[in-house]
Structures are given as structure tokens and as C-alpha cells.
Image (cartoon, rainbow, N blue to C red; front, side):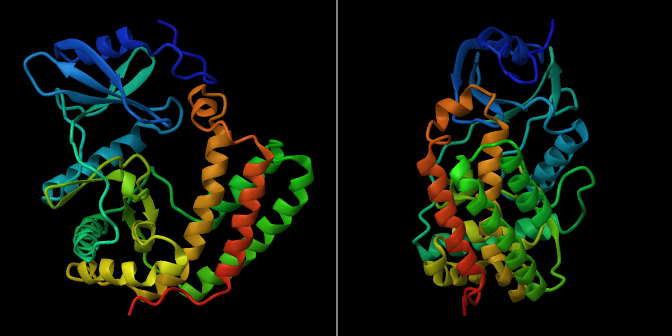
Length: 329
């Protein structure tokens, strides 16, 4: 059967094909398919006859190579083997990634929970301990087929894409471009102040929405963005707003350093990473705009008010990059 065209990669992924894919592994579904909240990939809860429901994740065609997805799955399995609570793919017939009629998918166990309470010292200390252990495992090998977070890949390239694609209102383009140039210079300077920091395999997208909290334990999900970078990339998003981040960082590091030393020089990178996320996030939405799920989920994206807000955030980040880093002592 012909796969969907690249500009609408999931157009042919209806309920029947989803169930056919799952049943191609020898599983018997009960016909229930519930779409879960996911845009980059398509993720579904699948009812299984006589068993617990499973989660089927259909990877976005063309984004990752099989080798890159294999490294994600291997990393998840290593973390699980180290007794870390991550939601790792289930192997069927010795494989975790399965092709089906132009799509690739993996099955995961269904886990429940809610976002952690980041204002609670005990919760943040627990998260720090888990991340210290996760990074100890992550430092044991290197990614070959997955990316690295950096200013060029997550800052300059997104800016170029947005400007060249005409995504901003014309009257805001010059201001955006000027600010972006200034931000790149400020980020380069901040990274130089940090020095030659160590890099390792990371979760990569460690925000509260990717942590399920249940019965006093954290369960990490969605390693789809795992990559190479400094350890602080997995910490800063859990520390909240810049002006309030010192105390949460201290609590995180109290737990983290029970298992792994944290290089305080990396604190110079917190605002660099916050800036890169702002730029990369907007370019990510723009790159996916042809997918009907994105205009439906982000209807504000093309509004001038949104880009005015982005420019305000860029101005704030430029000021933050010239300030001292957070002090969690």
C-alpha cells in the first residue's frame, strides 16, 4: 500500500491501520483506540483482549533513522536495567521498532500518574536523585546517530528557517533578526564562560509533562528527544522561572550529587538553554505546519501578537544572558 505523502505523513493512519499494525505482532486488540496528546509522533492507547492496554507510538516518517530510534530504545533499556523507572519499549520477537505499511511504531506499557509538584523540596530532591542516576548511566556510552544540543543546531538554524520561510510579519522581521544576532553573540559568550563542560547522553526534553508522579515515585516518559549535551539540560526546566530558580536548583542538586558530581560551571548555560528552547520551539511548529494537527493545536502561531510576544521574550533573554547565573548554594 502506498504511504502517505511527506507533507501529510499521517493521513493514512486511521483506526483500522493502527489496529492492523498492532495485530501484525500477534496481539489481539479489543478494537479500542484512544488518541493521546501527541503532535510530533502519533500515540494511541490500544485495548488488548485479556490483557492490560498498551501504548502504540508511530514515529514521524522521515525524522529519525532506524539507527537513531534504535539508540533511543537501547538507552531506555539501559536505564530500565539500572532499576530506573522509565517507560521503555516492549520487545516483540526480539525487536522494539516495527515497520508496517510505510510507518514505524513501537509498543510501550501504559503508565498512569500526574505531573510532579515542583514547589515541594522532597519531590525536587527525589527528581535530582533519579537524574543523577540517569546521567551516571548516560555517561557510560555515547550516541552515534543522535544529535547534540548546541547554538548552531538549536539557535542559528531555527532563526534562519523562520526568516527564510517568511513566518514573521514583515514589520517584525528586522527586529527579530537583529535580536537573534545579539542573542547568538551573548550565547557564545556565556558558553565560553562555562568552558569545556562535559557532555553525555541525556533525556533531552525533561519538563514536568514528561514525568509521571505516582505514589511518591517519578516515572520518566518520552525519550524521543534524547541527545548529547551538558547535564544541566535535564535540570533547568524543572527549576521554574529564572528569577525563582536558585532554590529549586539547590533542591535538585541536593539529590543529584548523591549519585553524580555536578559541574557548577554549567550554570552559565541555563539561560543559553532557555533561549535555545524558545527559538527551537517556534521553528519546530513552523516546520510541522503542513501537518493538520499543528494548526489545530497552535492556532495562535501565525498571529502578529504571538510574534510580538516572542520578540519580548527574546529581549528578556538577551538581558538575562548578561546577568550572573543562578546561585543554588
